Amino acid sequence: MPLENFPCCTPIYLFTYHRYFINCLESWNVVVTCFFIDTAKNPVSYLKTIYNTLEKGGMWINFGPLQWHFENTPGELSIELTYEEVLDLVQKIGFEIKNKV
Image (tube, rainbow, N blue to C red):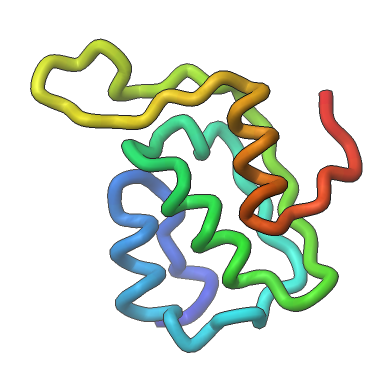
């Protein structure tokens, strides 16, 4: 699958990554996400996957709010973190926060 056809939408992001791009560990120098992290039922999985695709010194740029699309949905199990909890998790995974708004 060519990179220009790489789908980056929920819920197929992790499936597609693990199926087609598992050999891309530490191979991208930048990953940009927009209105994306809050689409995860488990943001830890998204963040670890993004971190693992970045080469050493790579950068992740994220835009968007935390509106947690599965919050209060009957029958859906999901993790909804506060902004501060996301920042803490991002650092625990290994990212260095250089700028935040």
